[in-house]
Image (cartoon, rainbow, N blue to C red; front, side, top):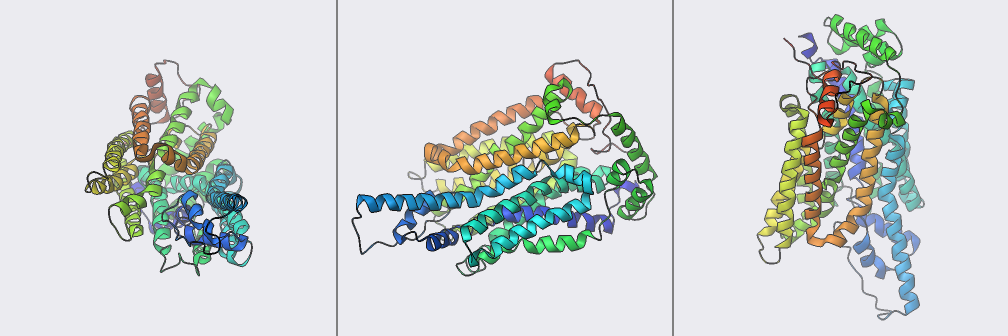
Length: 524
């Protein structure tokens, strides 16, 4: 089949698009490595005494390594007033660091609602160019943060970078899904997640103390995301616009055909045009659906609730907790440089995301999601057991280490990449933009909640923390087994029928429109 052909233009186009996803991952991971030096810098510019450094380290969010303490020689027994002032100063630094981390998620939550709208208003290419403006502004603020009020510039820069990532989290999957051949759409869709985890890994590597994560160069590390932003902006001028946007939104059949021929390497695109014509007719007959209607219309309620649960499962599985907690486990195991073991976790993260690219079209979405969640449940149990028995059996630390690597592997096989493109397969043209917007908002909100609450959960549960996450993962696994249908190779009518079957309803959907163009179909 001609649609199976992967042309040079398609490869260039997809690579250019996922540079945005790479920036997304880089921005997620870059703040962790230089945490100590940034907190130290905040303390310096705000005049927080040296004695407070240990307290700051103990309470700071996402802390991975204790800051050195400097004993006070001048006042070994501070007065109550001085002690209160020290606590207030410490809490102030903690608050600033928390804002430095979480402002990114707040920006993402806000912008996630506007990615689809911006893509429809300007076109996919121009929308990504506009999004890059936010990336550049955020990178510049952080890159020059050492020269001004660092806390204000970093918090602002992180928030603006979050706006960029919120837009990109909708625009990139939308664009690559529309330019990809139908039979490769699932595999190419997972490249968004692969680029994200690659960005996280690169940020961990360049954030090493002897590279950029030190007192002299940390601001350059934060501002480095400007490089892929500039590169992508230049490359986007050579990428074809989405054929579906040109045909369905602008009614430009000639331009759409020209764009398709570039993407398919000059092959006959008659079948694609016929498919888009059919999609356009269906779209024109189907009204846009608001976010409220997704929850009030019985045809959409079950799919949107399942979509939200998939994104909640991804974030509440404890995967971010693994990255927060892994270094301390590696330290317990006697590794002198636990940061390298953490980078190893990032490398495993990347490798298994690449594996999922090849598995997703063979095993199916639901199957991989269930395999991933079941594996994570077992690994969480072993991690908890390992943590509980560390003091009695030294070798249990290696059980915990192995469980961490396997936990990350299972996450990237299914729960990591699949929710991002499976949601689009639940809905036809009318409700899809609203569904994607609310799903992205849900993902960002859960991300924010986990980042904010994880330190408190650890303080509350101690070594039992991953028993808690095991329970959460088990609940989501059971939900997936009973409520989530398989979407591989199915039209929207078939998917809607699956939802009706799982909900025990025989009511036909009000807008049952085929969705062959979204999922891979069986070809002869």
